[in-house]
Image (cartoon, rainbow, N blue to C red; front, side):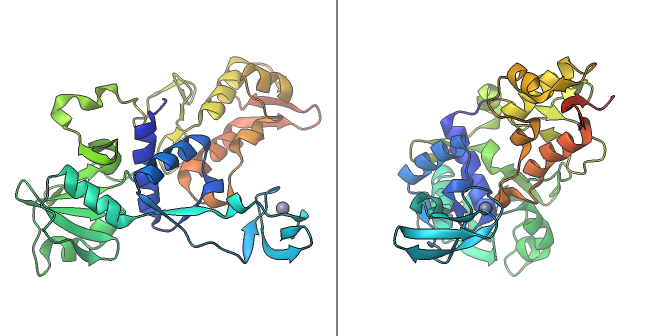
Amino acid sequence: MELTPNQQAISLTALMFVRGSASFESSLHDEEMAALELLKQAKAVVPGVVNSRDAVCAFCGMYRGPIFRSDEGLMVQCPDCGPFALDPASQRSWRLDDEWLIRKLRGALDISPHATTTQIVDGVWDIGRYKKRPVVLARRIDLVERHGLRIFHGPEPRSQSWVITPRPLVRVPLEPLAGTAEWWQLEDRFALHGLALRLLDPDQGEKADVPQDGIPSVAVHGPFSEDFAWVHLDDWPHGPIRLTEAQAKLFAALWKHRHLAQPAEFLMREAGLGSERPIDVFKLKTSNRGDPRYEGPLHAYEELVVRQRRQGLYRLTPL
Ligand SMILES: [Zn+2]
């Protein structure tokens, strides 16, 4: 379940590559912050443009308010929470340097630095040849599917390419490029070693020691996996839902006491969590709205947890 710092770093690389735009430091989790430090050392990220007009509210995290100067320095005016002093750190953002990723992938694949890289369409590059076959890098697999004609059968045909993309956020057909190209998921096929990327050999069993992060296990306790890290819900279109450690602990506690509703503080203590109410570990940051990886756990919470309002007791819906 736990990823090593290098695995966190390649995961964050993939996430930032998918986004393309800058990510605010304040929107990153603790593990992602550690990964960001690695990426800074590797010079993989460049500072985003500092926004001096508005900032997200440090209290509610819901609204952006205008930044203004007062006697006490720079302030932010949240429409809901009122004014507060701006923390300059909250304005720091970083963007993955696409050129860095291309350079490191070429290094990992032993592609000559003299070979040219060409952008085929926005977000899709031809970065050279590996084992005499073209290597195509794309921000997302759906870009490759959408522009397949242009990529593989354009003026320069690229049949039997290697296609590298980050692992998709939503479920896609098992072999979307079957017959046309071989698809490699960035996080699975490459590892960060010091300042370089290295190609993992799938035949060497190098993945054996990687936690089964991307592989949802089957439902064992009701809809939950053995370790409560995954929830299987039929009405969720994006496949099994991955929970954070805190969410998994909370669901484990709710499962243990599924026959009798319990007060919030009892459940939170059982789960070993510091927050006050169960919903606290499911709250979405503004930047994660609409992302099924974050919306999924909240959906599971809404679907599976009943709150008996009058007594403030919680339990799982009868399963
Ligand atoms: Zn606010």
